[in-house]
Image (cartoon, rainbow, N blue to C red; front, side, top):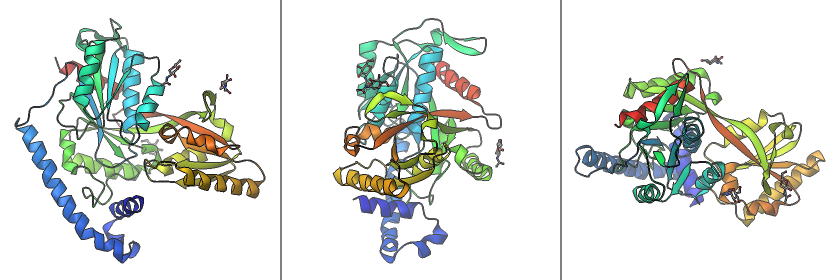
Length: 393
Ligand SMILES: *[C@@H]1O[C@H](CO)[C@@H](O)[C@H](O)[C@H]1NC(C)=O
Ligand SMILES: *[C@@H]1O[C@H](CO)[C@@H](O)[C@H](O)[C@H]1NC(C)=O
Ligand SMILES: *[C@@H]1O[C@H](CO)[C@@H](O)[C@H](O)[C@H]1NC(C)=O
């Protein structure tokens, strides 16, 4: 299964002009089948959208405003960091209590990370495949309020007049394809490092929807914008504006904030800790390059890496392989290397990393930032969020 995933992924991200020279005949023979499945998939989703569009299937509306954060392609596009950014701002600065609705797929690793970050705050995290049912149970348990009644602009910041633990807004994690629920704001994340692969739909390409879906969006955020040259950003932007010229386009990046020890999450270390050390980066995420590049910027002496495909589980044999690699580095450089993993990988299986004794395992924590770009800034983005909360009433 892992092997098939790799092959399909390779086909999806190989430009047409390089297909013949980079893929084996066996891989090439898969293309017609993948192409046919893509066409069928396209027909099914457009049919589904038509049913909802004409009200043939009713949409579910929550009694609070809904902000959806979604994507058009597989993995690594900053959806969860964006959900966290929005929830954090609404809860800690504005004073609303947001309810995050997440499916919690892939071993619930993202849900666990959210739970740890928002432990002790007014942010609530509802995990479950049936998001309408999850929302109903949380709204019933905690109650809800209409944010319009309480939001006001004070000086240059948004504040609520009444701070309440009742739910004021719902944030749909991975909500783009969850069209059965009405939303007040649709934010689409695009990964600057691999925006649309070969432009085909699943499974031939990485797209989960055709690019025309940008017509349903209110804002697009190009994530990892700090990791590509400016002219690549311009190409991505013009592609988006070609579909919907009225979209606001924002840029975002994740910036490292600190490390914590895998064996003791309350032990935090700063980023300078790895300066001039030997490190091994191990990850099973959508954009391993961005992770490794961030570590490289911290000035370690030598960086080695092991990449696994997105959501890969670290089994015994993988741990053995990592350990052998660490031993190798130790012999080569004469000092003990440090292993670094992402938070996502840590949350997927925090216990198994204990099997790497006596090597030190650090977990890198990052935060999303909105970058200044043309007329779009973080303040503009926050204003958009507030307006979506008011639009409902
Ligand atoms: C939340 O914090 C409490 C104490 O501050 C701790 O006991 C609990 O394990 C934490 N929960 C999570 C999910 O981190
Ligand atoms: C890209 O644009 C940003 C601002 O828009 C600017 O600060 C940066 O220097 C540019 N980078 C290059 C390589 O031109
Ligand atoms: C974990 O780290 C914290 C903070 O550095 C420290 O106070 C605590 O004693 C550590 N716990 C263990 C079991 O080592």
